[in-house]
Structure formats: C-alpha cells, structure tokens
Image 1 (cartoon, rainbow, N blue to C red):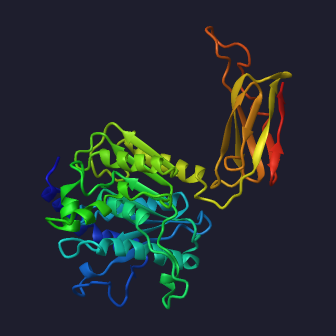
Image 2 (cartoon, rainbow, N blue to C red; image 1 turned 180 degrees about the vertical axis):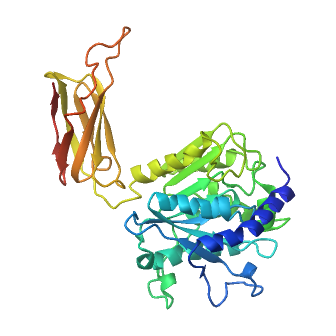
Length: 396
C-alpha cells in the first residue's frame, strides 16, 4: 500500500494544478455559507466550502442532479479528473452536476467536511427550480476519500426544518441515491486508509467517533439506493471497503449494485485509457435509468402469453421500451409462453416498443424449435395503461 504521505502529496498537487481548470469550466462559484462556514478559522479560500455548478444543457436535461465529492485523502482535492471531468460526463447523459470543494485537514477535521456535503445537498435541493432539477432526484457521488464523504452523507443526514428562517435549512440533506467510486468506508479496520483517517480524525481518534464514521456500520433502512465500483488491484484503498458497504446494504435491504474489476489502480476517475475499466460509467448510466432515477415515469403491471405459430414459446425474454429515453426498460423472462411483471417492475405507462428474444429449448442437442430471429419489418408496440395490462403475442 502506498504511504499516506504520498497519497496526500498527490492530492495536493492535483488540487494546485486543477483548481484553475475547474474555475474556467464552471460558469459560477457558489459559496455554501456566504457569511462564513461554521467553525471557520479564517477567511481564506481554504476556509470557504463552495460548489461549482455544471447544469445539464437545456432541452437535454433529465431533471436529475448529483453532488460530486472529489477524492484526495482529506488532504487535497482531485477536482479535475474526479470533479470537472465527471461533471461533464454527467452532463452528456442529461444529469446536472455540482462539484464540491469541501474543507480539508490539517486545517479542518470532522465535522467540517460532513457539514459541507450536507449543506451542498440542501443548497441544490432548495435551489432545484433555479437549476431545472427535481428536488426528489438529487444524489451524491464520491471518489476515494470523497467516497467516504459521500457515504457519510448517505448515512448521516439533516432533517428538514420547515419553519427555518433560511430556506436552505427548510429541506433535508438525505441524498436520493449514492454513487461510491473506490471509496474509503471504514475508519476502524486495517483495510481502511490511514491518511484519510488521520486527516479527518487526527492521530489518536476517539474510538466511538471512528466507529460512527465507519459507514458500513451506519447503514440503515433510510440509506438511499447505492452504486459502487472498485478494482481488486487497488492498493491505495482496498476493495474490502466497497465489499463491506455492499454487504451492509444487502443486510438492510437497500437497493444496491456493485461492479468489481480485476485490473486497475487507485484513483482512475473515468479511466479513459482503459477500455474495460472505463465501462463503469456506462454501467452507472444503466443503473440510474433502470432504477427510475432519470425520469418520473410511472409503471404498471403487465402479463400475457407468447406463442410461436400457435404454440407457447418455451423460453425467451420480452422487453418493453418506453418512448422516454430517460425512463427504464422493463424486461421479463418467458417460460412456457407465460410472462408476468408486477407494478414495481412493469413497463412505463404510455406507448412502448416491444422486443422478443427466443432462448431456445433446454436440451442435450442443438436447438431447433423456436430458433428464429424477429423480422425487422414487423415491429411490435403496445399502449400501457394504469393498473393491470395483458398483452398476448402470436408470432408467425
């Protein structure tokens, strides 16, 4: 494992080089506390947490937003490859992004970074109309130590105060989803990251405080749906961090998806030079869409029979593709001609294109029965209504 000092030196160097880049690319800088952050020890930039907003292009926005927390061991910020570059990618899929500059050690320790990300979530939600986003579709993302901060945001949140004088405090800080990229999770185990722990909690942290910020132990039924990715070759922040958070989500029945790649070092960002590892962002896009986090589309139940020349299709798949490209696709297995989707997994209400894929028989020999390809000239479509739908198909 690389030393914590080299980890922090890399992050500080990245911050110094890329701060100007991020300022140039973001149209504005938003101070989270214009009159001074809580516990501020000065009035320099290091004392001022802020956001760089990257709104999705008009006419291409899904209405979803994400607060992005760059990594850097709580000693620096990789605001370019784990901030600005990520924000621009989110814009390409119709998601508005807000890159967070949070306060760092040695100048600040806990709870300052947590206060900053909580305030960032509240700011974006309170200003949803200004940025054209939906207040119920605002998530948090973090890389490395920023992943620890994002997981802290997902497990420690402020409740809304409807009567507060400040409109930012009238909304809560709980994210609607969390995205954790090779995150630091534990502050107590040997497979944590020593530099992040030292910068956040000091040389001799209180054991109970360290436990409360070991966020796999803080997952509850209120933790939002979560996406994780990591590599098994990561020696900076071992993959056990992601595995622990995934297991905690499973234990508490939180919707969760995780992608573990065998190859790849720590701190890859979008991994543009690696054709395999770089696919994590496509998997994230799929997860956001299939989880219904890119659209407010309503689903309905659907069932029916599929026949081929009058006989039930032995095995296959049916998928319903909505007209809204941000809405989820619904897929079901077909067995002995029958398929069924409940209202939580069913097609989107409205017009849908239907695709059918035969999977053939289960047999020792090569498949013959139902071994065909759907003709391109005969597309199938249905109109889904609220409630229960029954769609039968007879392919000839």
